[in-house]
Length: 101
View 1 (cartoon, rainbow, N blue to C red):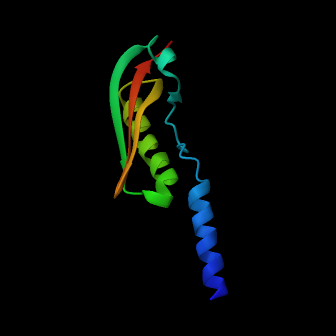
View 2: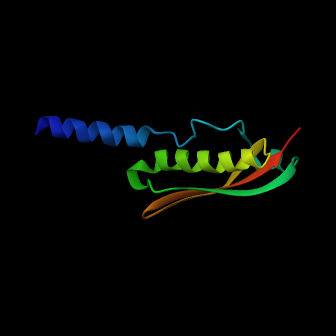
């Protein structure tokens, strides 16, 4: 029983400690609303993950990575996060991307 408790506590703490930042940014730099306004607009990009609740941190990381991958494929160099949402069953982000010099 003690092993199960230790395992569950470890999993819970790991899930809570996840930063929510993507591991692979696909060359896109996260910036502020002020800085993105100075860039050539590329568009809005959406990311989604089925992770939520105590796993929302890793869900945000996956959703951001997905949005950044799409933005990079469309020529964006920078992105700022407009909306981050956690709902029952999912985590999602909306980013505004631009090409900055």
